[in-house]
Length: 167
Image (cartoon, rainbow, N blue to C red; front, side):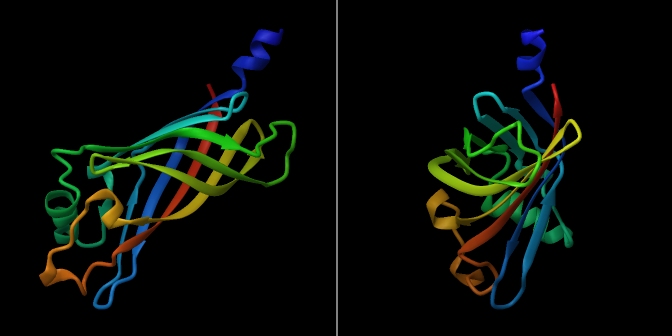
């Protein structure tokens, strides 16, 4: 019986979304990626997620093409990952819990230590994880051509919205 309780504390993402928003002088840029995957161990707090870069969808196809070819070089760096641990989560509590995930975020081939604030809420046997944080492009060696500096912000707001189901 104890074995099944431990097993129920491992969760895989069932539905997930990572989006970003860039507020620039000339044009705002937004994209959504629903092709991410994640595993969360509620017993240990360990979490990992993987984001295929070419999975981001933009309103304008040209933006998507430039994002993949010129900025993110998605052929060379096909995915972004986060590997870390969530602190502040208690599986016995049903209300929304403020948590933070500390770990290593890799984007564009650069890995940085990062702490991301967020919330986790239980909904039946599922867990809803939400988080927002800022990524500075320079930190991950993503360069903006001088010609386009007014079109693209130096940082983007990232929003994570994952629904986990028991593994």
